Length: 145
Picture 1: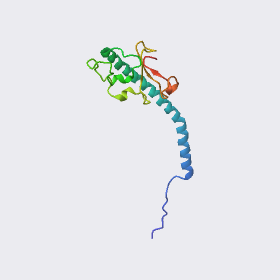
Picture 2: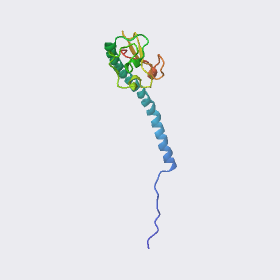
Picture 3: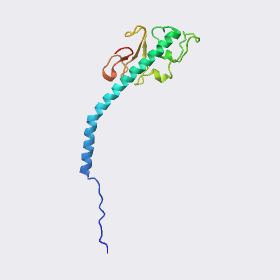
Picture 4: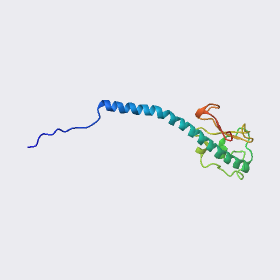
């Protein structure tokens, strides 16, 4: 006759689970701020790269169509302005309309004449969409270090 065997179930006690959750919480509290800071830095870097690409497209536009008037919008790189002859406009100068937006979803701003560059500036106002700011909200201007 077989002796009755107890089915032993192995698992974590509630204390062990609480300790694990606390350890994970501490790790998250230490690591999360560093990661979030890196995300802001990477968006600034992407904005700089995109502004440089827009500046190249803008230079091509100027070669084809001449200098746009003050107050022109960055959308002239995608849609022919009414004051530009269809025979000289060889656009669109960017692959899609999304390339006119910064990493925060705002349109880049075209400033003519430029405050940093002679002819024009390509500007992103950062995460807050307002001039000025620090960190992720800092302005990104093509040509400014």
